[in-house]
Length: 635
Image (cartoon, rainbow, N blue to C red; front, side, top):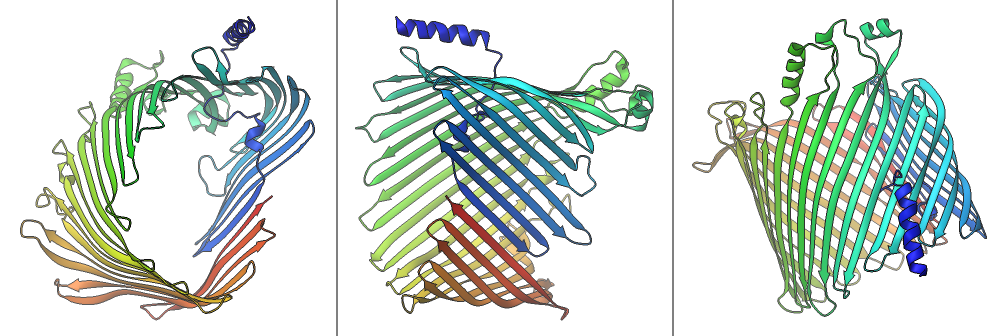
């Protein structure tokens, strides 16, 4: 009887609250999203770019009171002929008091801003909201949260104040007999006149489980979000309506229906996953003030309708000596563009706009299939074989759009790994790929090409305890051939060959002193290529060398490294495909330092920087400092 009452209450409650929304996005008022303590700050300076990223999370929970805060701040400074500064901040704080297990109330603050000193259309925006909320828990796994507050919304220098209100709800695995129901919902209005932003979102997940081996989840999702944006009005509109900023409304609606099936048994090495989804998306743009004094040159509103069908499957077979993985996915999308109709626009202009928008219409089909197998030939020998194939078909129905094309991509890889003895391991790796692009119409067919890439690498790891060395050598070749290069001199077939040697070695002199060396050598050649007789005419050669030996001193949780960093890049042009002439030469050398310090197993400080003395082919000299600092504090 009690179960029937709960089910009746649930159906009644959410049939009247179906307006709600909140979605696969996390709920704003959930304290779970604030349940972490962390402080991470990363500063990086390379060349003329400075970046700072800080993430802070903290919470306090005492008896019936909860307080949480989280922040993400990003700043980028670029120095060139002018200095550009771009800042972003996302800050949220919540305070909650529990009167009982069924009722809680609190306050939530959100502050987001974006600032860019470049002269762009929207270079400054901020949003500050403060909301009071109440949480009602009629049952253990059902939460309803009505809220209301004030909002301060600023765009392109204009600040609007208003109200924000709504409700969100969550259902966590509500048992209804043979299935469990989970849902998140949200309904929100932000009235910052003359702009109004709205959000409606609902999703339901219904899960059925049979004998712990078969799980079926059906999902239904709906969301609609409307945003109003300021933009500077054109002179005719500004004069007609006596405004400075016009307003564009962007309404995006998303719907999908999804079914996911998972099959696995505890005593079987085989598991299967199947998923199918049908989704729709509509994007509607409307401008509030439209001037029809010059209709032919005025902007017009548009609408985008998208239909998408997705299917994916996965099969895994896992035993002690064998792992097999199979993946397949298929996606079909249809996208339609059209202008919004208006009685003030005559049919001639409307037909012109429809023709322009129809050129953007497109449909596509994308299929992917992959197979991976890893076989244990013995306790010390492993063989991995992987295959991947992708096919894309892209069609445009308009007679004025010639972007119709087919693309094929195939990738294969064979990897052999062997443990010679406890000190030495080796690997052999062979990879190859084919990428074919074919444009259907003659207007774009000069872009048709076939790209073949072949790569072979080998290496090993040697470890005796004191001495460790990891080395690899790799040769690769890229042959790109255009189908109609004789008709268009701007498209020429080319080859790119490269040899790479990498080394990373270290020696432990004592418990406190060690040496670590890392570096690589890259030799590359690019040239014109003829596939018919497999001949090439080299045109460019690159010689790149990097080396960084460092001595480290380790004392308890402190590690300090000092060394030298060297980098050189020389480029050469071929004369008549034979002699090499130096085109550019870049050399950099200087001290490098690295520090890592762990304080009380909570604060981790890492510093890496180098000072380089740079010399170029014209004998010009300059100096530059580079630095990366990272601080991580786990409470």
